[in-house]
Image 1: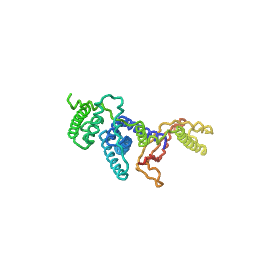
Image 2: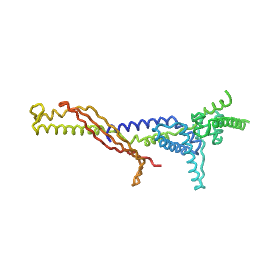
Image 3: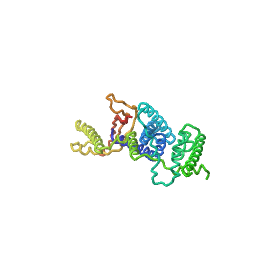
Image 4: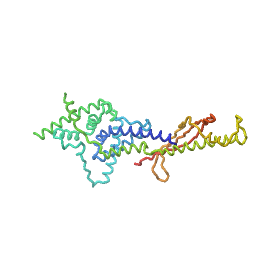
Length: 185
Length: 159
């Protein structure tokens, strides 16, 4: 290929690479947080994010290779998580004698410097929420989505997303009160 | 602030764990592979100059051949005697325009080599390289059109 054509293609690839890298830097943490809620350990969650990135790239190839919007990214990540769960289920059936430890300790950033006991109890309460409620809370509080976008991502109506969110907050408040009562009497 | 807003404020203080540095690097490497940005590498300017050198040589030959016709026939438009030094004077020319046109692009999709090698995306480009040069001595404008057919392959990571 001659110099000019190659230079043009190279510039195009560099521009695309830069756009996608900027997107993953801005949203990687959110996607990981979502994936981590649906997996048993860090490595699986990171694999899921990478798998989702590849699927998103191929999906966006027909749309000018622009970086995807967040609701689409979460949708794809959900499918990846379901696939991953199915594969893990098959693996467990083949390896009945293996015990899988679900490591919840690094779901959150290092909290050893925090003195706030309430924060610790709240983290525990979030981890105990049902899957659908925890998903809505994750997408709304840390996922930077609106109720409309959550609805689009989870294939539910925005009203249903908002209802689940309110119900999740009520549950968290009750759990927090219960944990405080148990700890302090 | 109602109870919902209070609970929201408490939740927003919690910071979920983020991607590890290793995972972040792996994702960015993956992006480079998907976009094929590393495929093109750096272009050697000498290759570029070689192309121009080849064109210059071709044009010099063309001009020399056309001038040789005058010598063989003994014909010179203005009636002056043409001598050998005229070749050196006619060797200088100015590039007026250089255009590379992409005539067509064809995407062949993912190709799986028969030898079991790494699959790759294949794109075929029909390119036309047009050069217009001016011979300042004679005022002749020469257009050289060079069609070429380029194939770009982008290796795909296999999962």
